[in-house]
Image (cartoon, rainbow, N blue to C red; front, side, top):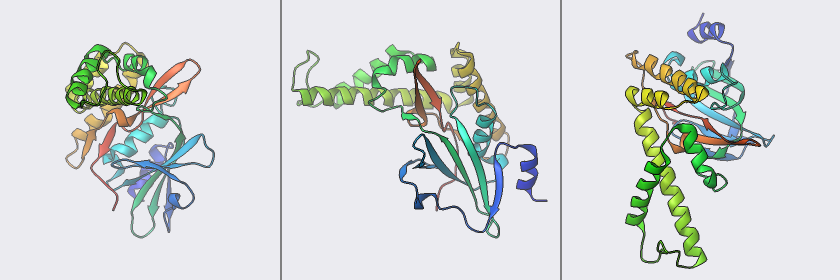
Length: 256
């Protein structure tokens, strides 16, 4: 019995399928974006997306596989994305593997739709809004040219809109830097865990930290923390915005 068949017996979250040809997601689904590992496509349902990721290591050493498996065991945690289906496709002769998941469609963290919600989102992460905003102001001052409106509110409407967009993007960039630096080390992750009084966020961070720590103990693992503003999305609910951590871990693998 092969390794991936043994793993299928230990977990029912991700279905393992042996195929003669990997499914061609891009043939029928418009591409929405891509990251270091994942490619994201629109689903015909409209309310979900399809993500596909190569698995180029043993699944035990794949941060992506381990994270998806863990998230599917914790679907009651609002900080995790809702995953409705997950399959690991293995080519029957070449052995190449591709993980394909169907998950809820979320709003980008840096979208204008949620810019006004930034204070609430920062509070959920336990990040000090004043510190991030101060860094943003300093960066904006450095990037501002003579055509930008001054702090007194002068300038055209177009200039004011450009200034607001710049301020928002810099604030989000600073937030991303803070999160990335903290999350990329065991000490930083522990500080994030200890720094929040939200029990569900604490649990989400702890479970992700455990995956990375397990990877660190394996000589063959290339797992790394990868939490930043592009790997955080927002679920808009009638009760307010909910942060969702989508891809906080990475294995050094890429598409051909």
